[in-house]
Length: 190
Ligand code: GRF
Image 1 (cartoon, rainbow, N blue to C red):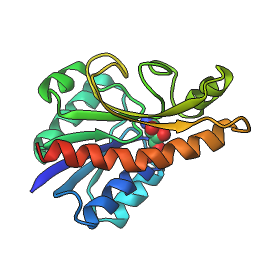
Image 2: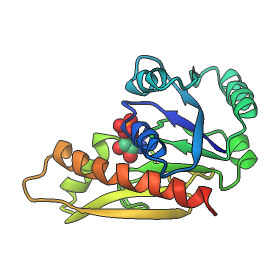
Image 3: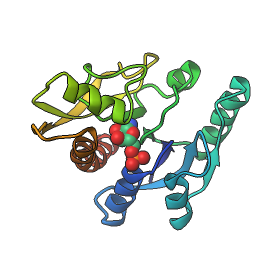
Image 4: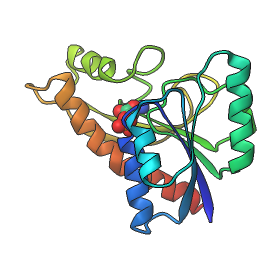
């Protein structure tokens, strides 16, 4: 059975989408654990509701953060690490330890609207303010540069004239919930 480790910092709707896909037997995998950078988030509630082990690792002090990552990843031995709304940079030695085994989902069509500061509503606000006619989501491999790893798959959605960042975010998130499980399934069956 292939094993996933999920990283999250927020509500966890992408995490839930992965769980749903596994439960429908569309992905042959188990979720070994959830790593978060904080407590009090929806993703942790989802982990508890699904009896998935969860570990909160504050990013500071950095040496404890890094050793906590190594310790839990060594314990769980993931075949694939999925950043499902994770707001912290993955330390370089973790990236090097899991080459092409860490993926991230970003709520825009990278390489545009990515990198430092482009997360959450900031992304959708920038897309609307730029007058883009379409946006979407990107699943990419994580390398040592923020949001710059090789793109695996993108899904496009229209930007409507009456869109607010919130309405666009909702449309992009629906696309994310389709694309991320699909990419995981593809990578695990290669
Ligand atoms: C998603 O928009 C994802 O693209 C971004 O963070 C958000 C996570 O949402 N990286 P959720 O926690 O999965 O609901």
